[in-house]
Length: 380
Figure 1: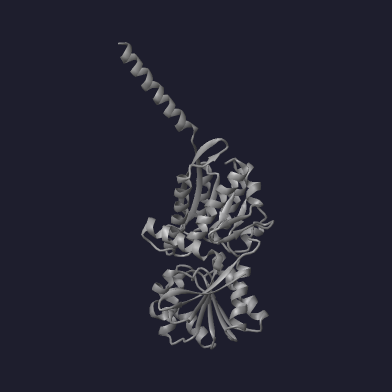
Figure 2: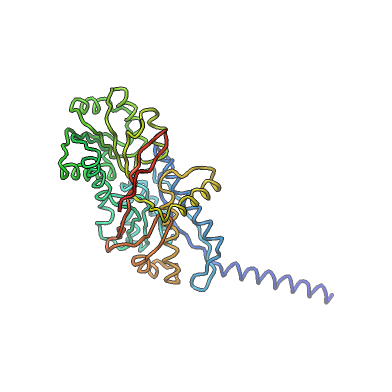
C-alpha cells in the first residue's frame, strides 16, 4: 500500500513538474498578411512560406526572452490584395494578440492597415511594400526592408535612358498604389534624364485585354513600354504586345520581376527583352547565405523561391532580434530596439532611418534569358 501511494505521489509530482515546464513557455504570436487568393496568390504564398521557415528555425533554438522559453507562432491572414480585406485582416490579428506583423505584400493594403497597427502600438515590417506614402505617414510602428518606389522607379528610369539608350517611352499602370507610384517615379526619372514620354495609359490589376491601350501606344512608336503593376497582368500584356507586332523592350518594377513572369509571358518574354528591378538585392558577400536559404526553402516546401520570401524570413528574424535586445516580447518595450537595430540578414544589412525606411537600400536589375530570371547587377 505504501509502495502504491509512493508511486501515485511520484506520478502526481512528475505531472505537476511537466505542467510547470509547459506553463513557463510563453507563446509569442507574430502576424503575417499577404494575398493567398487571387491573381498574385503565388507571391503571397511564397511570402508566407518564408515566414514559416523562419518560425520553425527560431523554435528549434528554444530561445529565452524575459526569463522564459518562448515558442513562436505565425498567424497567417489572406488580404487578397484588397484594401478592405487588408484592414479586416489587420484588426483580426490585433484582436488575436500578435506582438508584431510582417506584411502586407502590397502597398495598397499595407497603407490602410498601418494605421490599425499604429493605433494598437504593434510594429509592422513590410517585406515588399514600396509606395513612399507607406512610411511618409510618420507612424513610429511602420518599417520596410526594401527600397521604395522613388528609388526603384528612379533607378530604372535613369538606366533606361543612360544605359539602354532609349529615347521614347510608353507607360502603363494598374492604378494601384504600387503600380501608379512606381510608374510616376519612372516617368519623373526618364524626363530628368532627357527621355520623352510619348504616352501614358492605365488598366487595372485584374484586366486581361490590353489591345486598345497597346494599339494606341504602338502608334506613338515607343522604344520601351514600362508597366507599373504585377506579373499576373504583365505576362498576358507581353503576349498581346507580341501579337500586335510590338518589338520593343519591356520594363517594370519588382512586381514583374518574378520566376512566374516567364511562364505568364511565354515566348513573348524573349531574350534580354525585359528589364526589371527588385526592391532589394544581395551583394556578393551575401550570395552564399541566400543560396543556402533557397536550398532550405526548397527542401521544406518542395518549391522554389518566387520573389519576396527571403525578405519575409529576414523580417521575422528582425522582430525577434529586437525582442532579444529588449529582453521582452512586449511591443512597447521592443519597438525602440527595432527602430535603432543594426541587423545582418540573408538579404543584407538592415538599419532604419527616422521614417522606417532602409538607410541603405539595395536594388537588383534583372532580365530573362532562356526563360530564366537572370541577375544583371546590384545597385545601392
